[in-house]
Image (cartoon, rainbow, N blue to C red):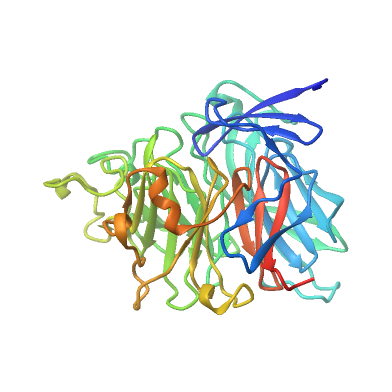
Length: 427
């Protein structure tokens, strides 16, 4: 018999999740339509040579993670504004607790650890954290857009197991709404920071393909800056924000990653109730929003798109889900630890079903190898994704990382757990 039940409503990736915690029972669903799941049952992967292990649990709505070492993981918790340090599977320290606005997709949303990290404890490491700032000194679940001071990217120094010397590298004004904040941070092969930012729930600038719109404001694109916060790109304009754009026309993205073979950037993008995407993101990429979702329709007039004097170029997605799944992370498995057949392949997670999808790339690695009903690059129904489904039952995935051990780590937003996928013969 269920006794005391606490209910939390969380919006992540434009999908509303009602989460009920009681003992080991968990319910999550878009409009509360999902069936109850017993958390003691592990997620599964299709490959029988692989298994799933629990690395850590007890997290509250975790959004992103980053490794210091193999058994030393940093995790952000969305609504608490906290950065937890997990050592050997146990939550050991709260390294950071910042006041965050938490309504909808707001909160503490992204983290990255600079590759200057060494085991020399006398050498500080840079840690980057992206979050929606509260308008007060405490966490707030404000109901109006002005109840936020905007989104911010800070750099901290990590030394002697403490964070210090916060430096503001990027500040975005409060969004028109409470969603599409972006915030997933990665460090590219050029050692610069890359951050996807959504359209701020309704901004209408040139970056949203509004002809004669206002100048770009940092929304609706993938931004890039140096690790010191300096602009260097200058894709869209010579304005401060214009110097930060790598790509634009992006409605909302929770995941980007660089191909370790070609150096090309790829992303996932959430559509407006349909047409979720996987994209190859070349410099100047225009994803088409707010004029195009999914594939460009036949006869589309491309003069309706902003090109920034020819610096920007639209291209169709490499894959589309017609029925929304809320794709989150995209990762290239730069490892052969799960088997040579998966090395450098693409793995994509979703928030709606808690699934992981696996894609092989073509010979020149500018597209995906798709066949059967997916040969047109479109999954018209959920069941059509079965051939590319790698794993499921992860309870809504907010992040995936390749650990220092070469295994795939999965962060469950709903389960509050970190999972690890390993070969079945590994003890």
